[in-house]
Length: 440
Image 1 (cartoon, rainbow, N blue to C red):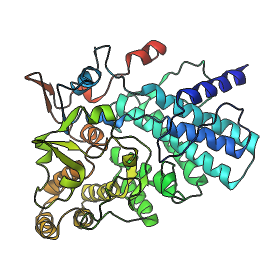
Image 2 (tube, rainbow, N blue to C red):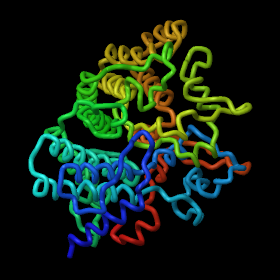
Image 3 (cartoon, one colour):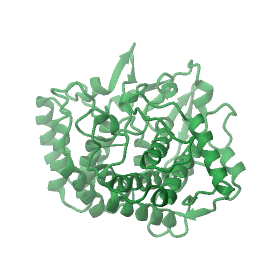
Image 4 (cartoon, helix red, strand yellow):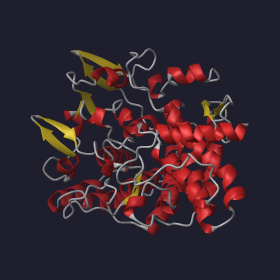
């Protein structure tokens, strides 16, 4: 009976989430009982295609954007922008909590069935590696949204999120601690790393998939967020051994976060939801972080709309982004300065800057960076993360894991404050999630 329930669930999910991004060119499988390698690759394609597009909504919570108060979509996103998670307007778009677990469901099904049904092969090992990586990444994203920032002293007792490792549509998942969630994430990634066959996807159109490079990049990000500097640096370096290219904006018209970019590692997540893009402008204070005369990212990342700026990094599948080399270079820089290796930190920071600034601007920036002490260098790395990774959905996590600063959002002629170390840096579970699972 349970198998019937599972396959009905697969069929329903495949019909609900059948549309795919153009460049992904993936067609979910679910209307048949999976028996072959091709069937399981189809299930994995569905897991990818329904992976949540949550990063745009996280951008609304940061210091990057302000709302167009005349937007037709205002009611759907206003309370996200105002950090009103406690009692949002009923029309507010909920954070895509459930789709994380739907994606995990497909990964779990693959991992529980593929060996028995499709046998052992290198291709099946690759599929299993990707399934483990998807499960790890989904749990990691959930943890960063709905749990407090990692604290090694309290992780064993801090409330985390619900773990899902089995195919059972009727189970009620209990909350795990932060440390228990990380134990699963690290276990899954160790298995993924042992099984993965592809260093990089075989073509740019397959860059939504996890590869060895993407698994290394994910591990680097995880260790960075946990302040485990040696591991964050080592995994970033392993990924860059496979491909260390950076997009040189002095000569290239391709954005670093386009899926065809030479530095793209994994182009899975939609970071520019159309509703958010057409309803927001970039804050002038955020634009001011850039050298207007010499930073090529100003014209590459943003465009003028009257007297205001809007983001170019959205509204198009080609800007889907999960991991890229620009982030890895900054991971190395941050990890190096945290371990007092200022020479390596400065070298990494300048390696990126050379590909983002005009020659004249780079010369001045090089002199500035070489004169920084440790504290100022760390601050500059944080600022460069803001500039480089702007509106790619990582700013909220960077603010949360570091200083949790005060943020002011203006709306309706009034200032709304997210205080420093505000409890709202941890997002509340969606109302419908709690209704469906009181254990939350």
